[in-house]
Image 1 (cartoon, rainbow, N blue to C red):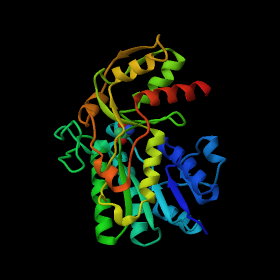
Image 2 (cartoon, rainbow, N blue to C red):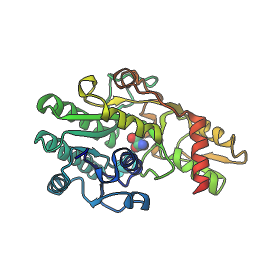
Image 3 (tube, rainbow, N blue to C red):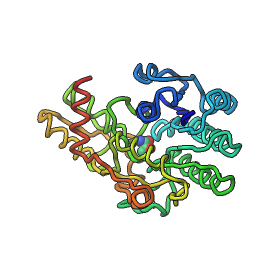
Image 4 (cartoon, helix red, strand yellow):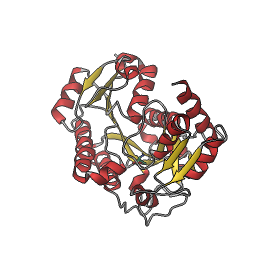
Length: 314
Ligand code: AKB
């Protein structure tokens, strides 16, 4: 029997594309998608699906045993903006789901785990430009605190119990197949939908707020190549810095205007501005490059073009 994979949170922004790509790569039946709700028809119709709450250990264990799961990708999480509104719910979801999979690893019920961290683990005292892998973190958001704690637990379970857990600190992710929900970088997806439907967008971040960003195809490729790398090549068991590009809302709007000259943008920063201001502007990902050969394919212009082309077709 080949590889058997379970995705928790498969219907979200990353989970959807990750599931589809893993099914392409390893075969539809090898990848069990799961979430607390059903997802897009392409996801639901392309392979097995289980309704599953990532905070319920016994339910996950049943699915792991039934399908003889070897690898788990835990993609269920509450993102930064929503987490500020529901701090305890965010902590419970983000931490309990992680403990569930780490403990399955500790009990040797699964061989390998992927867990997403974020640039949100950094805070206002972190060096903002070219933020190093190892540096002062001190996150000031609920989400960032949960992700940084999660990173410490991943490293602990790896060192103490030999759990093969791997992780990436994702930047803001831009995708057209599934929308993000509740993040601070979501503006960089909303803007494309509005540009094509109304020709206007009111941005909730200020014009010159620079944040690290990445096109989804790059993020999925990075995730799968990290998971395929031999274990002893990996020097980071907390979470790897990962980068592709860094831009501001003004630069993204200008890039869109290159294709849609009449597109208009206004700026009305809200509570998410403070979150964005506490995060890095750009990231140093040299360890991801040297340890597992990471190189991004998409820059701002190719991201804009691909987003507009695909959303137009939709
Ligand atoms: C968010 O904005 O909360 C996420 C992230 C950067 O982790 N996209």
